[in-house]
Length: 328
Ligand SMILES: Cc1cc2nc3c(=O)[nH]c(=O)nc-3n(C[C@H](O)[C@H](O)[C@H](O)COP(=O)(O)OP(=O)(O)OC[C@H]3O[C@@H](n4cnc5c(N)ncnc54)[C@H](O)[C@@H]3O)c2cc1C
Image (cartoon, rainbow, N blue to C red; front, side, top):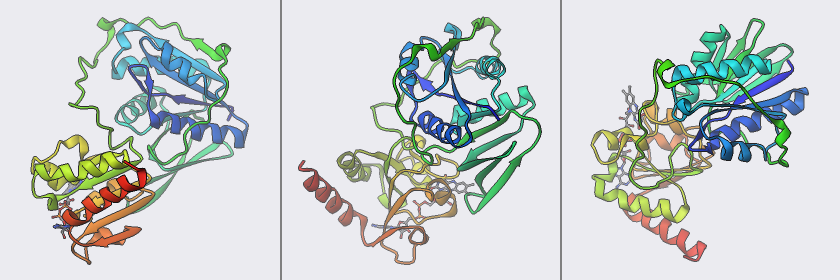
C-alpha cells in the first residue's frame, strides 16, 4: 500500500468532527506504515473547508467542486469520488460511518467493485491486506473482517472512537482540483432541501457529553431538568426509544439500534433500563453513569458509576454541583 484517501464530510463549508477523527486514524496508519495521506472534499463553495483542512497534516487535498453538488447527491458524489479515487491511486479509502459516509462508501464500493468494511472500531494494515473490527448483533459480538483482493479497500469508521487529526502548517501547494462537469440535470438523485431542527442544539452523535432520558421522564415537560444538566455540562440531549415513541422528544435524539450510535466521553443515562437495543447505541461510551431507582436495572451492568435513586431528586443536585464547580 502507498496511499490512503479520506473522504472529508463537510456541511456548509464546515468540516464534520467525525471526518477529522477519520483523518486522524489515516494519519496514524500513514505514520506507522509510511503511507501518503490524501483527502477529498466534494461539494460547492469549498474554499473555507479547504482552508481548514489544509491546516492538518495531509499530503494532498483533492477538491471536486460543482454548484450541483452543494447538497448531497448519492450518484453525483459517487462519481466525483470515483474520479478522485482513480486519480489519486488510493489503496485504502476511508469514510466516517455517518449517514452520508455509509451511503457513499457502499455506492463507491460497488462502482469500484472493491471490498468495504463498514462501521469499524479498529482497522489494521497487515502486509497487503486490511483487517477491520466491527461490532455486530447490537454490539454483542466484535467481528474481525479481512478484506481480500487487489484493492482498493474501503472502510467507514465509527464516529467518536478514533482520535482527531493533528494540526499542521498551511501549504496551498497540497491542493489539487479535479476537473468535474456535473450538471444538476445529470443527477439521478439529489437532496432538494435540508431543514435544520429548531434551535442550535448539539447533535448527540457529535457531542462529547450526552445526558439521556427514558420512559421514567414521564412526559415531555420533565426533559427540562435534563436540558439544564446538558447546558451546565455543555453536552447534548439524548433519549431512549420509549421516550421518543411516546412523542416526548424528537427521533433525532434517539440513541440505540434504531437511533444513533454514539461514543461520547461521558454518557449519563437517566431512568433508562438498559435494553440491548439501547446499549447497542451507547455501550462504547468512555464513561457511563446510570441513574435508576431499580438496583437490578441492566444498565448498571455497563455503567462505570451507578447511582441508585430517583432521577428527579438526583439530576438537579448534579446540575447544581456542576454549576458550583464551574462557578456559574
Ligand atoms: C427492533 C427494536 C429496535 C429498538 N431500538 C431501540 C433504540 O434504538 N433505542 C432504545 O432506547 N430502545 C430501542 N428499542 C426499545 C428497547 O427494547 C426498550 O423498550 C427501550 O429502550 C426502553 O426504554 P427505557 O429504558 O426508557 O424504558 P423502560 O425499559 O421502561 O425503563 C425505564 C427505567 O426507568 C427506571 N425508573 C423509573 N422511574 C424512575 C425514577 N424516578 N428515577 C430513576 N429511574 C427510574 C425504571 O427502573 C426502569 O429501569 C428497540 C426495540 C426493538 C424491538
